[in-house]
Length: 210
Image (cartoon, rainbow, N blue to C red; front, side, top):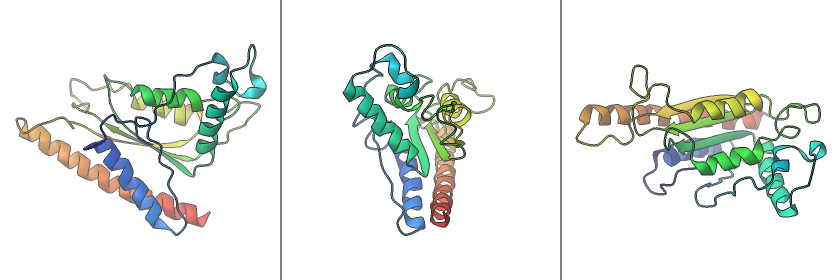
């Protein structure tokens, strides 16, 4: 799943594509479902009842079309062996298109644990891939200002019980006028590509065993 507004030259898209390709090639029958949240944006959550699974909703019901969209999105997530989310950091936070997806799929009583649903996603792999234009590493001025990755780790990991792996690349906006930063960005990008290809292969082979 991609959320970058950049269609060409996007590093987050290139990283998720590398993992997806390795997953697909790891074993016969492996398939990848790609959702592009920028090309096909989701609406903001249109009704408060959609915060909850149908059996525990109170008050007026959401309209049928909105409920059907949420059903498709949650079924897509529940049916996946692994989730891969790639995004750039926008204004220190998530792209709004990705936040809309989270609001549709984080549903107590359906995808998040409750007495109604149990923990249907417990232990499922989730890979969070963040690209950051600046330096958010230890000791940098922006250290701790990535307000997007922790949200996904909280919602997907702590709330929904998925096994989250986070990968980040810094300084993606570094230009030739800052050669040291550009070299570091290239190094981090190459390391992330290698790590994600290896992870994609492992996830693909694990699926075959199951």
